[in-house]
Length: 291
Length: 301
Image (tube, rainbow over all chains, first blue to last red; front, side):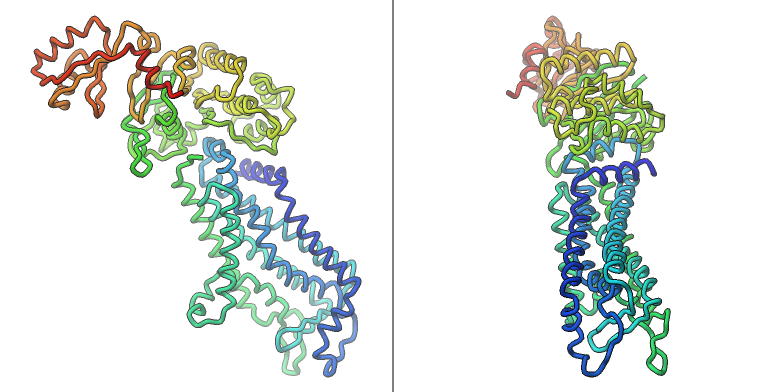
């Protein structure tokens, strides 16, 4: 199947649309970094205003690690939309062009083509995430330097020592890859249902918005399904930044407060990926290629 | 040896029966013309031959193997252009051929790719993106992709669409050469009798999804032959009796009656056979010559 994966990657590489997402992420991150570089101290003071009377924080609060956290909070909500641009076009875009006929009259089976396309879309998604990590983490570390990570949660603060932060970001990015692959798989499923490019992209984005709202609303009726919605789990990369404390309330270096929650989320997301891709294969195998 | 053998092939889209109980055979080395007006079921049939559309009913054998069971092995030996030449606008002709060369088991060399580009007249534009090509150039590139792996069976659905007169002549020559010089089997469809009659050794006429006539081009276009329509009180009985007679290979059953393709001079003998066989005849009508009939069927513009 490697030749057809290569072909799919080559087509992604040659398609102008591919670079929109890379450009958009770079533009957003650079603008935010520039803003924080120029006016970051005021922003940090605003964040800390409620605890300044009770807590004194030494060191550089606005360091590369905190900037990365801020960026991920902002961007990991929007990156799925960029992933949808490519993933939701993988099958329907070819149907729209008419090139699906060319592919499906080769000796490779439809299952092989669909899986190769998903692998290619997944690699694209992971590359996008690596690009995001490079800009959000490494560039921020270079511009702002590093120090302990000080996070303000809704009703508590977390202080993670500098040497205990980097691996958490690696974990968070691996987790985020599952989230984004779920979006890619959903886009793929939508793509298998249509013969034009725009419909599946809009449908994927709409589905993400719809399920995110369901995941966020605290209504008993929705609470039953919430644990099974992929959108409930997509933002759980933040769990890597909740740390266990000992009896003296000191942070335990190298610990994660709720590992089970992370594992559960990864399982739920992986199940969604499997279901979405499986459904796409089934639909494409049954489909008459008319366009 | 039959390269393609189709038996009782049907395809329905909801209430529409696009192809209805179609059967035919294509022998090795033939240029087999598939003739019918737009919407007659040609493309649907071709798509079923290429496993793009799942038949509602019927069986397809290619190279003596069931298409359902041996799809991959069969398609390794098939090259096709289906209707429009749909390609990737952001890739060049060279890139298209290089990509499609990777999809074949056999190694396709850079020299073969260059030779194919030259064969379809695109060598000088090989590195231009397809989005800058005319329709005719795209059609030629589509044919190049179909021929690249040197297939035994070539299926061309309306291959001269969008080509200028010289391009049409070139494709005609190419198809003839593929059959005559290289022994390839070619199935080519068109809605133009004038197009098909110049290249095909055999013709199948399809109309509203049904086979109307089939046979060697020289025989079908014989001006002495005519189509006779027979209406009876009991078509099933009449068909049974005709199928048991010397007329069996000439009988086609349609909703509006039975049709026989026979020389004009045999009409009195047919009439005598009907009377002798106690067929309850309502009418026997000699239609146009076959050529006129084909033109009537296929001339939509």
